[in-house]
Image 1 (cartoon, helix red, strand yellow):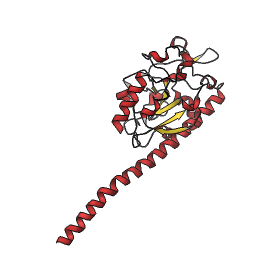
Image 2: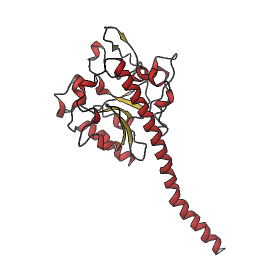
Image 3: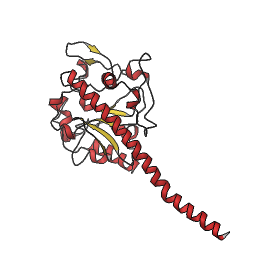
Length: 250
């Protein structure tokens, strides 16, 4: 009996040691899959910019009837994911295997019930807008981004409401609704030069602000319109949001 209890105790100790290791291995595999997804999104976005005068697809969605002003003066309504979907051709690319809450499907994201439903695992940086809403929104150009390797274009997010598809560094509500770091405390980000990286959330806000300016942040008051994404100074809103996400997942 004593020998049996000793064996059981040893098995229990080994299980306590190995199960967390197995869990981390599974999450590392999911992070690799998410990095691959984001790389495909980046390739689709870069192909889009080559076809549209080196301009990014504008942030927005069809649920709020956002109008996207075209260069010829016409307007249409679409999300950024609808814009790059022809280059990707897979709705699964938009769903991270770790993002259960954010991976829901809303058909309105791509033009109503007639279009394919798309997942919500990834959000575009709202600072990729350049034109005021009254004139319709237009994505900014590659040339207008001064440090593209340090500016986030798309990030992981867990927002599920309507067909929202963007992350605005000026909205403190994002702290609760959208900040997401499921991969052992890291979140996958796509940068404006096309490379992808898994970061601790707090490191995207300081020492270099990788988001650009947001409403209520005075440190970058001079950075507006197409230049909003270029503000390098750490600001209260992005820092508070990302540090809070860090605490939630680390």
